[in-house]
Every structure is written in structure tokens, then in C-alpha cells.
Amino acid sequence: LADGPLRGKRIVVTSGPTHEPIDPVRYIANRSSGAQGAAIAVALRMLGAEVVFVTGPADVSPPDGVEVVPVETAREMRAAVLAALPADAAVFAAAVADWRVVGASDSKIKKVAGALPVLEFEENPDILAEVSKLTEDRPGLVVGFAAETNDVIENATAKRVRKGCDWIVANDVSPATGIMGGTENAVTLISDAGAEAWPRMGKDAVAHQLAARIADALV
Ligand code: C5P
Image 1 (cartoon, rainbow, N blue to C red):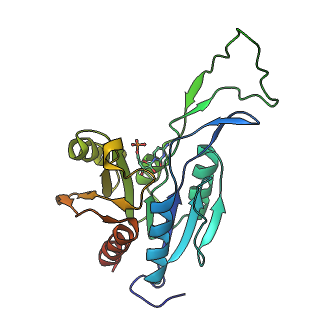
Image 2 (image 1 turned 90 degrees about the vertical axis):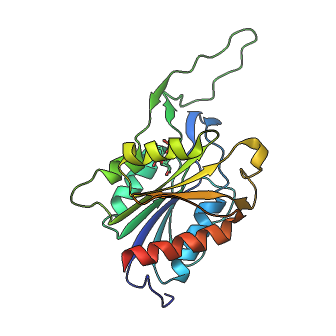
């Protein structure tokens, strides 16, 4: 492990989307490349942290030097995160699907001309909220993300309180920003001290700045 301020600290990072099956060949998911989560894992590791990287099916490969726990669904991600605790901090960068399909089919749903399937949904567990509300195993620092398309600060500030996490990294993912799927990010760090807007920078730079702040908070 690299030597650094996070040496000896265990940090769980979730990343990527989750896939919620409709049948063996179809799924619903949120858009997420997994780039920001992977960059955060790298940055934490470079500061010496032991990183458990719980990742859904992302576009980017998981980084070297971290413990990779690949998952598919939100329920699998929840189980993997809880199994990785206790930890000193947890960063929830995954774009978890809010809903899963009730009674996903074990066999491919046949296409029948003129007959459309109807999907029923049920709510997925909110992993960030659940971990934030743990009593015994709650990580000392819980960081969530908020991808918003409007009223970014207001929505993210409310989300921080609702979820019970310590920090929210808020970003504007309106299509016009080009952030979704791109290499840059413009984020606002929301904590009990208020909202701090960071300049637009590469996702790697956001990750390094966030890792440095996590190191400050944990020592
Ligand atoms: O509620 P919303 O999806 O906007 O919250 C985003 C934050 O919550 C992210 O940090 C995301 O990783 C986390 N989250 C989660 N489990 C869910 C939904 C979101 O951990 N089911």
C-alpha cells in the first residue's frame, strides 16, 4: 500500500450503475460510466487507503490495487457494502437504480406483435441512507453524491439531511453541461459548514481534491 495520510484507513467506494433485470437479456439502469467512482478509488489509494470498490457493471475497468467486489443489482450492492463494514469512511458514487422490476422473468419475454409487456416496479434499498443511519457500524465519514438537473444546491442540501450522510458531492448533470459520460465535472461539496463550489475540472482532479478532504477529515 502507498504511504500517505490515509494509511491504515479502510474506505468503501460504490461505483457504476446497477442493472435490474427484466428478463435474462433485458434490464433497467441509470446512466453511469463509473469514471468518477474509479477515479475516487484511485485517489484514495494513492493517499494510502485500503479501498473496497463495490462496482456495478461500469464502462471503465476497476482500478488496480483495490479490493474489487463486482455486483449487478442494488440488492447485491447493498449486501456487499454491509459486508465490507466496518470502515472508516464510505463514498457512494454509484448510480443505483431506484426501482427493480417485480417478478423478473427467468426466461426471455417473447416479442408478440401488438402485445406490449407491462412492467411493475418496487423500490430498491437506499444504500446511502441505510449506512448513514447505522448506529454500531456507521463509518465515521459518509459521503453521498447528488446528480441533479435543476436547483442543484437546494436539492442536494435537502438530500444530505434526508439521507443522513455527512457530505454530499453535488453536480449538475443537465445534458447541456456535457458532464454525463464526459471527462470533466463541476461539483459543489455540501457539508454542515455549507456549500462550497469547486471550479470545473477533470474527474481525476475532483477525485484527488475529494480524497484530500477525506484525509483531512479522518486524521
Ligand atoms: O436519491 P439519489 O439517488 O439522488 O441519491 C444519490 C446518492 O445516494 C448517491 O450517493 C448514490 O450512490 C446513493 N444511493 C444509494 N442507494 C440507492 C440510491 C442512491 O446508495 N438506492
